[in-house]
Image 1 (cartoon, rainbow, N blue to C red):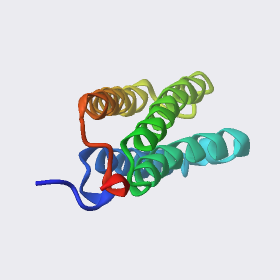
Image 2: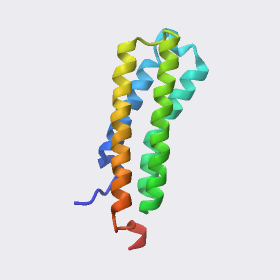
Image 3: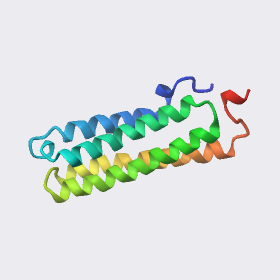
Image 4: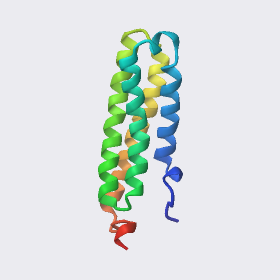
Length: 128
């Protein structure tokens, strides 16, 4: 059965979970005072969710792949920003590693979806 809504995609569900975690850790007393980093890491996490959903809604596999690549790039950006937060003692290593592992899993899932779309002969809903 084909997926009808982006909310049904496992990659989007995991991206949403990660975004919630990012918002949770950036509310902490010390972290919240670094306005620039808080804004950047939150924007990157929202970017992952948004690009997955926007790409899906475009209705074409080629456009969807491009948006998935952007989402994958944002996963790397968040992991990098987590290192900055760790180095500034805004978060502990355990928190950083837990979120980072989820981001690595999401990157793999995104890559697998991209590869699947590349192999597919179906061009997308808008080409029917």
